Amino acid sequence: MILDYVRRLLIVFLLALCVSIMFFTGKIAKAEMNEIAEETVSWTFPVEGVITDSYGTRSGTHKGMDIGGDIGSPVYSVAKGKVTKSYLSKSYGHVVFIRHENGYETVYAHLENRLVEENQKVVQGEQLGSLGNTGRSTGAHLHFEVHRGEWTIDKVNAIDPYMVFGQGEVGQLVFAHEKDPFQAVGVSGTPEMTQDVSSGELDQSNERKVNHIVHKGETLWGISQQYNISVEDIKSANGLNDTNLVVNQSLAIPQSAAGSKYVVKQGDTLYSISVAQGIDVNELVAWNGLDLKTPIYPQQVLKLQ
Image 1 (spheres, helix red, strand yellow):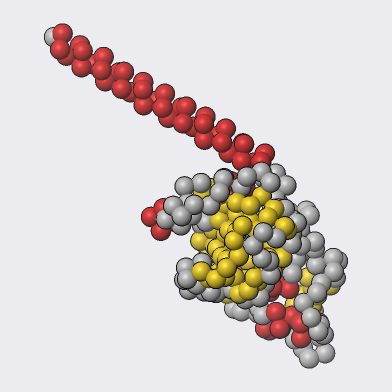
Image 2: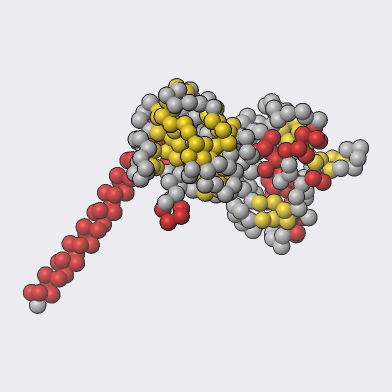
C-alpha cells in the first residue's frame, strides 16, 4: 500500500513537472519572438515572388524560406549592413551574406548574379543581385535565411523568417520593400489594397478587359500572377515598352488572355475573385458547384468558365 502511494505521488510529480516545463518553454518562446520582432522591426522583405517552401521542411533541414519568381528580379538587402561573403557556391550558387548592425546575418542564395563584393557596406533596400537558379536549385527562386548571430555551417543560429515578417504560407504572393510582404496577396479586399476593377468592357476588337488600378508596391509581375496571365500580355494590351509602373496608373487586363482557372490566394472571397476576373459571382459559383456561403481556401483551384 505504501508502494502504491509512492507511485501515485511520483506520477503526480512528473505530470506537474511536464506542465511546468511546457508553461515555461512557452513563455520563453514568446519572449524570444518578441525580442526578435523588436530587433528586426525596421527590416523590409528582400524580393517579390511566391513562397514555394518554408522554414523547417525536409525533415527540419530547410533552414530558410524559398521565394519563386522571374529570373532577373531584383533581390534587396533587408537592412543596412556589411557583406561578409559574396561568391559562387556549389550548393548555394551565387550567394551573398550580409552582417547587420544588430548582429544578425542574412543569406541570399541561388542568385543569377551578384552586384556587391565582400566587405562592402550596403544600405537597406540596396540591390544585392538578381533572382536566379544557380547552385543546387530546381527552379528560379531566392533561398533566404535569417541567423540570429553569425551564419555557421550547421546553421545553429538560424531562425524562421516568418518570425521577422509575420506568418505566411506556401503559395502566397509577397512583395519587396515591405515590412509586411503579404499585405497585397491576391485580391484581399483590404481597404488599402482593394483593386478598382470594372465589370468588364469590350474594346474595338471585341476583347473583354477589366481595369486594374496600380497600388503602392505592385509590379507587372505581381499583377500578372493575380490575373493568371503573362507580363507580355499586359504590356501589349497597354502599349508599355518597359515594366515601370506608377501609383494610380490604370491597366487594361485582357481577359481573353487569362487562364480558365484561378488559384485561390489568402484573403480571397468568391465576390472579390468575381470582381477581379470580371465575371458574375453567381456564374463563378455555378461553374464550381459551390454556393455563396461555401468557404474557399488558399491553393484551391477554381474554374473561371
